[in-house]
Amino acid sequence: MARILGEESHTLAIQDPISRSVVTFHYRRPTSEERLAYQLSAFRLDGGERRLLLGETRLRFGLEIITGFAPGDFMVLEDGREAPLDPVRHGDWKLKLADHAPDLVSYLAQVVFEGLRVARGEQEWG
Image 1 (cartoon, rainbow, N blue to C red):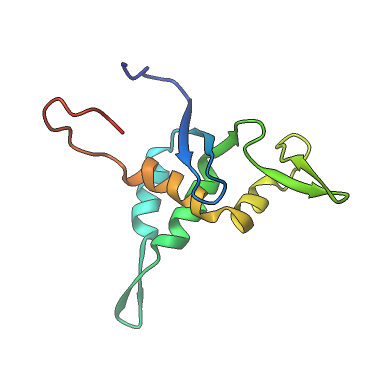
Image 2 (cartoon, rainbow, N blue to C red; image 1 turned 90 degrees about the vertical axis):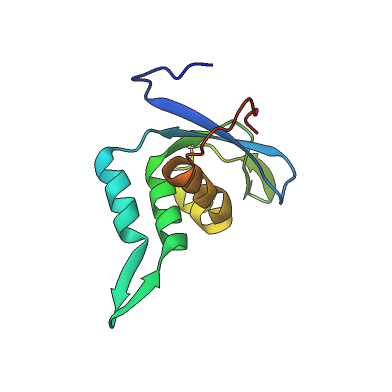
């Protein structure tokens, strides 16, 4: 499948090890400035020592580029009952993901910002 140049919205399907289901994130393509900021924020000099901040960087930038997810991929408790997390109804949906699914959001950032691979031969993508 060809890449559609100029397309703004993208999706990434992730196998969630906790729910054992596939979660589909919708995200926007990061800007060049965000790509640079991501690389620069992964490390910090702290008293002359380099400190790795990759976990925090991945979560922060994952939250910046995520625009949504497939309906029903996340559930919340409302009045003692399960209800789908809905970005339209739940204005704090990104905070909920940061608190309860930081692994998935961080993985999104890792794939988008770091995930380029070299294709070798006729291998299929996984």
